[in-house]
Image 1 (cartoon, rainbow, N blue to C red):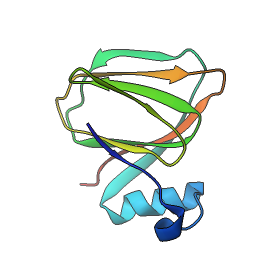
Image 2 (cartoon, one colour):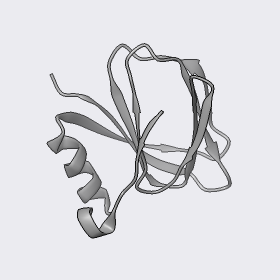
Image 3 (tube, helix red, strand yellow):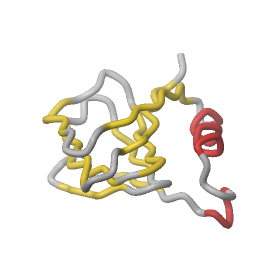
Amino acid sequence: MQIEHWHSDQDGPLTELALRHKLERRGYKVSRYVYSPGMFFPAHDHADDKIDAILSGCFRITMQGQEAVLEAGDVVVIPKHMMHTAEVVGDEPVVCFDAVRAS
């Protein structure tokens, strides 16, 4: 599982705008979502390569038998047609960007 972390020394302070710009510079179209505590996405895949980037809260991703809990500033790359699950962990909502390659 490919996970990237925000590095304040290289990327500056983590803000919504800074994270959005970082994804857009990589050629992604970005949508913002808020997921409530307890929200669970059962096994599914996507027709396009995508990125989930976390602004706040904790989001558990399970893919290819690996599990990771993502926190603010974390980015996970989800290849197209890769089955995965996702769920909000804890009592705080997850604010995240869903990013797909711009066409």
